[in-house]
Amino acid sequence: MNNKILKSALAGVVLSVCSLANAGLITTEITTPDSTVDFSQFGAFNFTNGPIEIGALVGESIIWSSTNGGSVIGNGGYGLSSNGSWNDMDGYIGLNNGSGSMSISFADGPIQEFSLLTNYAPGNGQFILEAYGFDNILLESYDISNLAPIVTNTDNAGDFRGITRDNNDIYSIRLSNAYVVADNLSFSRLSQEVPEPSTLAIFALGILGLASRKMKKQ
Image (cartoon, rainbow, N blue to C red):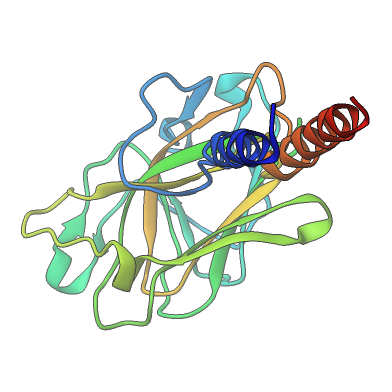
């Protein structure tokens, strides 16, 4: 194996490893989630900032909270400006303010990906969707209003937005601003963690480096 062939092989390995990365914003519902929280157990609106346990029906400890004491959990009428309103959803969460945020924490362990049926009131701030890791470290942040806007012209409508990662490292999620509402929180965990692409790339470089040294000695 000459140096040119070795370099070509190295480039191929690195490109293959890097292609494993798939973290980012998703705009569809997770098709095979581990669990889905539909907020149906809360009945009529409860105006609160929590914290409230929302995962009992799926057998997990999942905690919802808000920075706004007037936020809502349950079912009731909720205006979304030009995007209509939600008023017959069996249960959902709503920030009920143009600024501030709602957080959902996965107390039983981090997840790999999630999706929510969501909507917001255009013209009342930017809807930001974020994922946080251990020790509240920001992993991903997306301005939904600009990157993947939701436009609905009927009541009780919305679209799915979420975040996916390469490993189970999402400890909490945050929905901010724009009177954001959300229902049908679906989430999944990887059954076996996949090594970070950078780790695999370093390993591949090491193996090819050793092969190169061996060829030179010969």
